[in-house]
Length: 77
Image 1 (cartoon, rainbow, N blue to C red):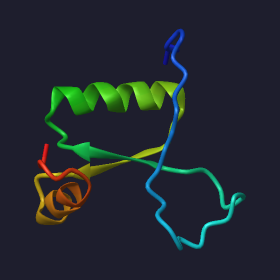
Image 2 (image 1 turned 120 degrees about the vertical axis):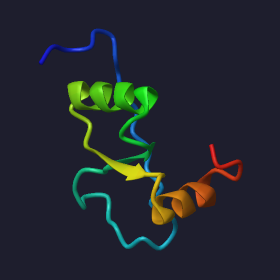
Image 3 (image 1 turned 180 degrees about the vertical axis):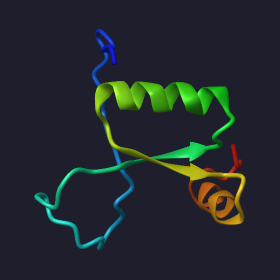
């Protein structure tokens, strides 16, 4: 797989207060909200993989995924 020139990922996670994770707990995982059929989500997944950034997809088509999205994005988009 090729590299993405000039791409410097900045990874921020929503650990929240009292998560119990220490600074040396291991790599953080980026949570991507979207669907597997979205071309926009697919582009981001390709870039994350090319940059070596671990990510998990939260599928917003499911009830759990839609509820998680509503908690962080009031407009649900």
